[in-house]
Image 1: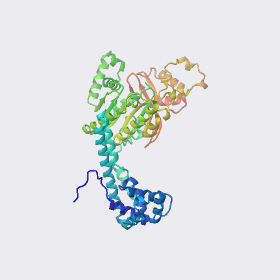
Image 2: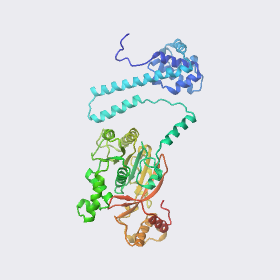
Image 3: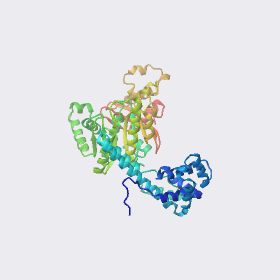
Length: 498
């Protein structure tokens, strides 16, 4: 047996001729070939040209046979390059029965996948030997992605009968574990959010977006705390802006209901120290993993997440705080256009990572200033997402956080009180309702609380909608308002806050 030449890439010319010959002579075979293979799946250049001519004729809804294909190749000025009409006749003589055609198609396809894999490996080796490698981790990630793309080459699927699809769907439904509150994914810890999303689903990318200091990081941390302590799932948090110590103090304040400022300054009374002791014990045992790498690259997030899942199979959620600080391999400053391209790559990579690890990933993101330019109603919209094109498209769930007093902190009570009733905005009504409710209860809501509106503005696999939460800023804690409070708000504002 002759030894294969090192540069001789895998292919099977006989199978390629049989496939093309079948397409030339039989309509059913033609459709099978065109829906199963692409031009690049053929190794020989003349076979690629024949396939191109066949595809072109079929697109024109004309009959495909030796005569029409030879005419098309003649118009393409390629007939002589494929060996003339005699070679087309040779291909047609290689025709196989329709029942055997799939076997030959699979041979051509498998050889193409193997060929692409080897070409990719050689390309990686060539780049390693000749190009400057400035970042080894980025080179590994890029090479790994290229290799996966080569071996996961697209193959057009065929139709399925309804009974086959029904059987598969029924099997999946039978295996879904639904909790008493209807949650099929990761329990978020917030009932209204669970109602809309049925819990965060595996493979989803979830965006939590708001203006700076509204509470988006605190909200993400509250979810992390509930998932880890109540749901028993491990959570990884990439904190690009804050240190691990700062994150822990925030989690400690939320868990113990002790003022974050008191924790930071150490001015704690005896009760607060007792409450903190219990929270310390709970958090020290919580399966939460923190990474405080500043200016982290997307390749590092991918590699660290993969490694963590190997060592922590119970990993159920990843949080990235925040998107605007994640870097690509290029790093450095960039103009707005290139940054949009970087965000597109980061967004696609994170969505791919969620699918690969089969867990939800929460990505914290800032909103642009556009919402602040809209007059009285400053509620954010999807278009307010920074570099929103790719983020909005790739995300499965987008939550927009709105806090009225974020824009009212500088306004005095009298500035609202002196307005005539007909000029009150919804934000004014919410603020007055809160104050009236406090008066009715005889004391203010503790913890420097703010009403915050969570708007699930996009939900690919569920419902959209808004729901209220209290954000206790002193504690960095989110809680569901009581029914009594919600009823009072409805009665005073005459506006259903749901």
